[in-house]
View: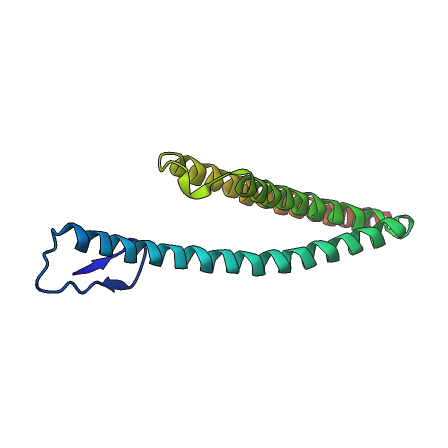
Length: 168
């Protein structure tokens, strides 16, 4: 008996001796046992992958903390233009960090993630999609605001040049 698992590109093959039937309860139990083992292996792989990502994230967080401390120490030497660009990046970064922290907190707060109801999964996916869409839109707005600021600076520079040319 071959079974294709949803979301998987592979097949699991269960060989059932000819003396048994597909409808035999023992054969079904064996098949479900093999299927559960495969699911547990996938979960273990995901957990190990998560540990690797968390370790890299921990190092990244430490590096950002050091950069933050350095910026706090040098706060007096930053000019206004650098400050506004840094503030936009900081706001976007803070938003992303808060989203990640919230997601990790939600995963750790769930007593048994595997026992959540399937009906709550679409809500979680929809919520995640909305949050991602909001982040993308926020980034686009920041980009447009940056473009507007540059264009206004260029306009001011051109107006000054025009005034100088008219004065001569």
